[in-house]
Length: 552
Image (tube, rainbow, N blue to C red; front, side, top):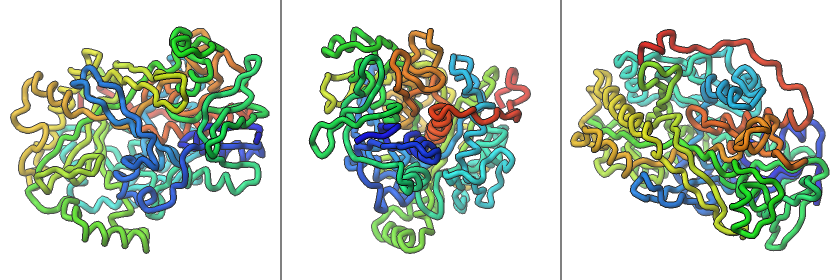
């Protein structure tokens, strides 16, 4: 088997690249270890807690014991299915903040400022306001990726936004538009009642072309001959095989598997590769390093009225919701239930939001376990730009072995200060008049958790990954020893090999990572094709005019 371009991974960026390269007439072969995404557990938005907890769809990774979180091992779900993690995620759509991408540019990723990437966000979107306002000028209308808003019928969604306003914060009609900062509607990759994953948006249309093919196989390593990537060694139907690339190999295997594949192929920290008996082709110490994520907790409130989703947390109600969705693609099953959100600054002197909120009208965990107290609601909250850094490394030279993943959460002293502010600001929001008719009492952290030490202990015990790992094949200048790829995604030191997924992020972006990962695939496709990038935008995003002196 061979093609012009061999893409490893049918995830968010890989699907987008297959679509654009195929559209340009190139021969494309996509390698994906996972299988089909057919069935209600993936396609029904409200069933989002199921696929990320199913071995059929998830690689099943866990972190090593996290030293600053009571040595807990945290789950690291990564999609093992067509669509990758876009098929098992929470479907939340966040571009990231403009200043995130300007930081990318300033850190060595030339051509990746917000002005440079905004045209790609517009190109990929087919945006629907759902009757809940929005920033039409800043959004795309004709792209493959449908982005919508939930119905927001539950009064708690409005209460959350109103409480933010009462607490003195901005409101925004569109955090993906001109102004991210503030409280407002949340967006989701849902279309016509279905999860609109990268598989639905990009891969299926791409596979309609005769020049794009998909094969189910497990990538073992990149084959490199005379300093050039020429193909990928895979296990297909249990047998070893080489898939040849006439032009390039493109790794889009996730921030966990892309660095793993590079290291198995001899590209990475020389001493680490030598430990495992792997011949060094390119000594790049940054491979696997710079690992970042968003840590979050759930601040949960018991509800004084039976208006939360808990009333549907029974077999009969779930069956009715499932049937309604199955036959009509309507009802509660057609939304991820994340329908209000916020981005705020934690203190004066921070130019753009460093805290994100997902609001959910039920007190429940990602594993589907509802709070014992019954009716409740919660805000998922956490800082956006932790200074802590972790690493992905090899457990052995055997491709079948899971890599070692250490996030090193909370290793930077400022993390603790940020978390204390997070908890206290969240409590202040829930204490506003807008929530007075709905709040019974605080479930967690609980009224007895007040001091710095008590909040720190709560975070150590309850902090969970928001499932946004990135940064492990950092994009930067060729003379940056920690950079793995250049600004066009080309692996430094090897010809014919690129990386295009969330692993190339120099620094984590605000919010959920699906949107910027797809954008990376869109933009990187133009680099692969040698096309001139889309013209940079002249639009200027909103920044709080008094950010230096005011927190809100």
